Image (cartoon, rainbow, N blue to C red; front, side, top):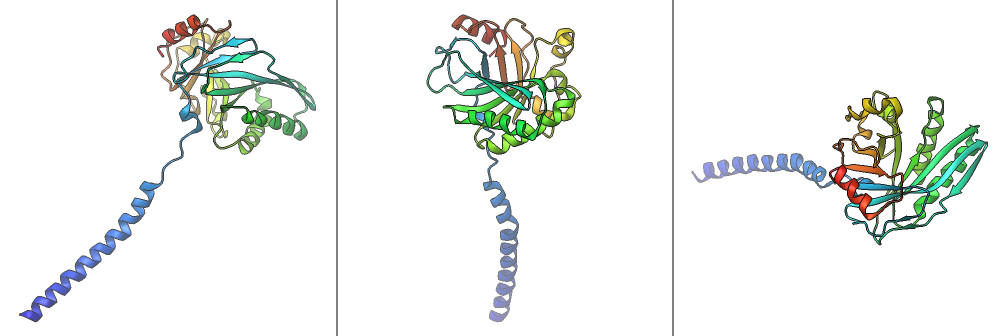
Length: 259
């Protein structure tokens, strides 16, 4: 009986040992996967409201930095011939300490060659902005035509490679780019901001169709204080004011867009 008892013990031990080994084989990889965390997007730390500060004196020292960030025009690049002309911001900008800032680059084209030399110059001018204090993102504002998309794609790929991984890459987007035109899908950007103002005859159509594709267009929207629309259901809203910002105009914007 003792022998039989020992044999049964051995069989149970072996069975339990096999189950234990199986559990290790199955559960350890699951545990490893669970411990891997997806890196947070550089945009995740931005407030839900971003105000654009264009080329004029802006005194925004009254903002609540947890609710409001500032995207300021940092420079304008004009692509002319084979050259890149840089016009830096010349107007003062006042913001409180801790403000999340987005450096905006406006690109204008004037019979450019779109040569590799011009591409390199533009990339350098854009990526240099990441060295400014408190910059969370760089945003490019370029109304590229269909024939200019190849150059723009190359520009964005090179900019993304040279920007720090902690700096987000954002672009403004014509509303038509986010409505059935999927050329943005493969771009190395963190967001495309569909602009729902100054659209002329297309204004009513796009404002009544707030759902945009591809997905890169779905998390943020650009609106204007002087062209109020129904508040889009997005994570982040960019607001343009044709006049200098004040405490009153910002409060009006926050109320208009339910932020």
